[in-house]
Every structure is written in C-alpha cells, then in structure tokens.
Length: 300
Image 1 (tube, one colour):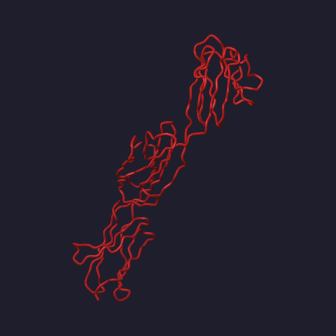
Image 2: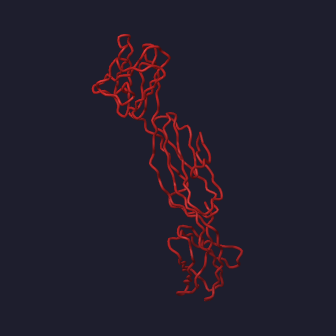
Image 3: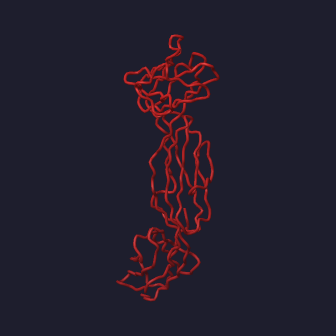
C-alpha cells in the first residue's frame, strides 16, 4: 500500500449561532367611554381582562363622576383633591368638570356596573363587561434552527410562523437588535440579513394581531471567525485503514472528500464538529495514490 497519501486543505470563514427564546407577551387594549350630559356613551362596554377603560368628560356645565356600584367597589374614583379615592368619598359631592379623564384597568372577569352619583336618577349609569383575556398570537422562528452554525459573512434568512387563536395576524416584524429589517403582513413571513461580521446579535420576530396583542421570539446570534483547517500527520493505522486529524471550529460542518486526480472529488463524510481537532478514518483506503481534502461547508 502507498502510505504517503496526500492531504489537500481548503478553509473558509465561519459563523457560530446560539439561540435564546423570549416569553410571549401581550398588551391590553383600551376602550373609550364619553361622559356627556347625563349619560355615558356607550353605556355598556365589553372588554377583556387586562384591558383598560378611559372615561373622558365632554363639554358640559355639570360635574360628573364614575363611581363603581359593585360590592366591594371595583375601583375608587379619585378624591376631590386629586389623591387616591376612599370608600367615604364615592358620592355626589366628589365630582369633576371638563376637561377631565379617568382610567381603570380591569384584571378580573365579571360585570361591573357604575353610575354618575349626582345624575343617577336621570339614568346616567353604565356597565363594563369583562370576559377572559384574549391569548396573544404565537410566533416561532423556524429558520435558523437552534444550535446551527454558519459561515461568515452571514447571509441569513430568518423565517417565522405565526398563529392567532383569537383573531388574525396582521403583521410580523423582523429585527436585528433594534434595527427593523422588514414587516410582513401576509405569509410566508421572512427577512434577510446579509454580511454579518463578527459580533453578537439579537434577531427577533414580533407578531401583532387585529386585537393589538403581540407575541415575540428572539434568538441570540454570535458571529465568529473559524479556525483555519490544519491537518495532522496522516498515516495508515491498519491494512486498508487511513487516518488523519484536522482542526475545526466546534459547531461548524465539514466535508471530507477524496480524489484520484484533484479534479473530481467524492464526499466520504459530512461532519458537524463537536471537538477540536476531529479525527477522520477511511476504512476503505486502497493502495492507489489518492488525495484527501477537508472543506468547511457553506451556509445552507
């Protein structure tokens, strides 16, 4: 056998990626009620837990308030001096004049009646009906896959899926750090970022639905320069078994190829490096002269 098989080395630059998932978040909606001349408009408002109601005083010469008639009070209308309301001042003495607004956020479900105490006999009453909170859209980054490693400069396509059980997804926004790459209003949802140099980046996909709720996923991306591919001393370790080592960047993928003429190459193995260096063993080595090369795979 020919114990002096030659090794041909080819190197590329590379990119390492790690992933971090952020919890899905939701933002509450806001419903508006006008406080008018002895009536609320609308008098009945339906919202979801986590939403807020803003009562806004219209132009009127009378003083009004928004007093909960639930037991116990669902909220306390602010005191006349502007401080927090007390159970002793929820009455027709405690009123406000235009311009004024009052906001309450509802965290529990139920029906919450209220009134303007000085004008309740005129029928100035209302109800807030609160149902269970709507779930936000669910968004997942489907590409890249967690743990993948890429060559640099990185031309990376970020793909996402988005689903909404309580409405419809109206937009998926993609970002690198705080920089917006693009907004997709219809599927497929994707964005492309090119030529990422060495450094750490956060890639995000934020889905928004027609209820104003949002969900997000983020991945942390680390771009690195890979180690040059350097081979160790090749040798036959047994009859028909040829072996050599080569330096790697852990997480990057490599081809090991063979040729008899250095023109046509055949891939013997595809390997994602888990250690540095890696060892390759060809158990079908012949006695004929041949050339081996190790090549860093390009990005998928």
